[in-house]
Length: 197
Image (spheres, rainbow, N blue to C red):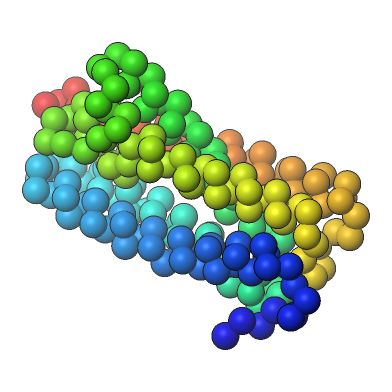
């Protein structure tokens, strides 16, 4: 049930429902990718990467879903939670797109379009078996979502545009850095496994 005020801008409602959807679908998608990985790799061999994929998938699902729920229910913490979820996701996705683009330049355009095969270089749990073309929509979603959050104040969010920008900048930047580190750590785990093949 939508608990928002009828006068709430439709963009905030779209952000809330979109984040709820992403929060539910992310762990499911990660689970499907893990099952796909098990057709290629054994649990014993890839257990570290599988655990990291499940862990980060659960974090993304929780943060994004809670953000959507908080906006929908007009919670006092919704603004900050959305900044945290957006920052973490943007950091993770931007670093991943950068790495995949660099990898694609080394091995051709196919890795950018079809990032999923039985060959190690085209398949990695650290990419959640996503191509750049699949991660760009998530990047665009969060850029637009955070822009909406700044433009249309939530209840208990800072009232002035300037305050919303400055209050949101810290969590977005801080958790963006954490997202980059998470992606880097995951990539390092997969690279270590790759060297053992």
